[in-house]
Length: 59
Image (cartoon, rainbow, N blue to C red; front, side, top):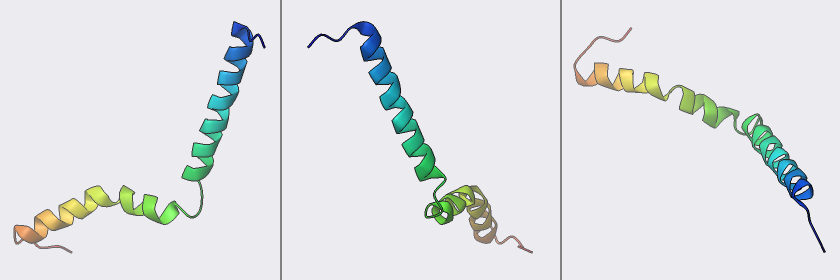
């Protein structure tokens, strides 16, 4: 079996597209929403910890 450069390039592009769509579907999955929301709020949790450890007032 002989595979030329164009065929190899097409196969690689197709596999990359499939991988991209898989990651995209995983990232936008409703099962992942809760963990991504928690991760998005992590920087704000650090602020709360800093204020509490310094004796700051938190409203």
